[in-house]
Length: 84
Picture 1: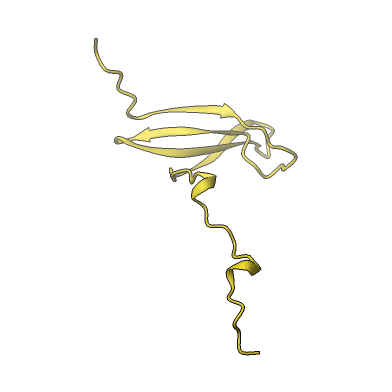
Picture 2: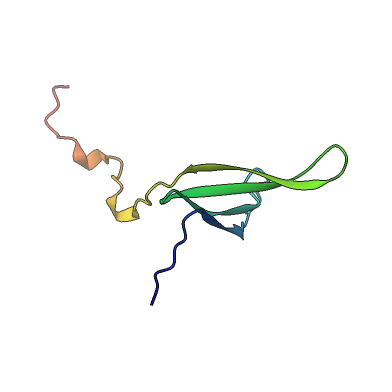
């Protein structure tokens, strides 16, 4: 069976803005020259009333699992033998 080549392709999905109108209307991924990137698109309207999409492409960043994030220090982390 032949392996699927997704080079130079993209997929966009409708985004839940969660009450923030500045968030993109669509988000997804695009693969260009073998490199997968994040893609964001907004629905706009021109001065003449024509609707179009504008967007941006950014390098895909790896998700950081919550358990690897460093917690802020608590007061228990400081030693009790301070000089004052």
